Image 1 (tube, rainbow, N blue to C red):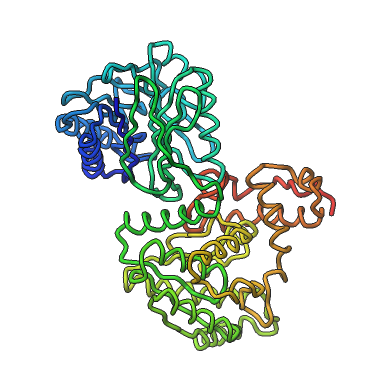
Image 2 (cartoon, rainbow, N blue to C red):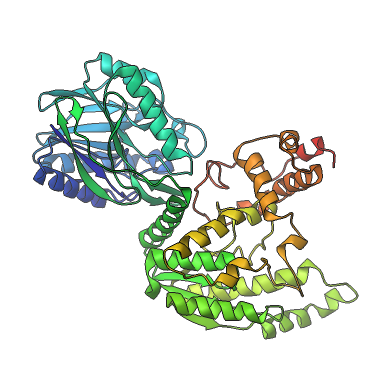
Length: 538
């Protein structure tokens, strides 16, 4: 028996387009002799469709499209993910398409309701196992979260399955690839069955899907590994119920996957929304430099424009480095000084500010001038502005509403400052695009004379360690102090996280790459009297 793994990049809501992708994958797999083709979770409608599932017209359209697709399938049995509406209930379902019709339906049993998942909002759990005959073998199907618990896999084995196939819509984060392998290995040990794990690929709003589909044999040994971050159709050959080993492995280092995740997220967000290109406010600093590198790698230099908006406080080397990098990557580069606009703002506010000393107000005005100019260029030319702020800054509010936060997509939203530097080094390791001085000079917003980030923040290695512990690990301030961090740093950082929730709520959507980003899986109230930092005595 041969199984075709269709690792597809489906578009949420593009039912005819997704059906065409599935049929093209089936045709390719059929040419390779596939008896069964497995597509990802909810492949027909794209994943996750969120509140589209609450629209009766959407569900009806999915049913109609599935019937049209089934009628066009020739050759192998095909497993197609779709949202099923029946008897007033909705299911995350898998259609078994055979001989031009839907021969059976499996309904997902385990509905995740944590982090970025809220499937219990939309679906009812299924109850029955699904085992089908394919080329003389009994193949059992479960969907994504089902494989994370023993029940569904064991019951499918007990129903006669000799092989398990698992369609998935499993988003990437830095620990997910290892977690998947561990979980699937546990199910193999429990059931004694080989597993074909099929995951989708591509970007969907803040989520990115890495693909990285794989096959484990009945002893838990990796038999086949598909590449990450690529849309691909691959064949798995079985001798009886034993998958034939095929060489392949994933890079275990995080930087290649994180960088690919960011490129994937940018490319799909821009392309699926049909933007002409992107604008990057290039400052001569590390964050905008990395954002520019990602944009060029994702879209090509012809679709990327860099704009430098210097103020009186920008160092000369900032302009030099911005010009140098723009030249290296070959993008259109323009400079629009904001001195005159800044003076006009100050003149307009002179009476209001009379007798008051300069403070963050004047700094924010500069940032907002830049945001206004970038958005004007975006409106005029149809290119989306990529914001350049990182997770460390967003966590503690070191960003300006309607200023450097202005834009349509936040590339580095889930990237800590220390990881920004690691990614810059990684990108330069296969072709220098970021000038060395940008990486080595102290980071600065350059909104006042001789400013550095550490005037306002703890050192980034300290800040990022506290943020990871509090945001991603949910540790208490006292537990973080017990790790050796200074109480005054912990108290200040935790307070800043809380008081800047209103900023994050207004930030552009951005790519999630950690187990806990500031998006779907971070839902703290803006108005809250809870003051956890007070449990730490500075």
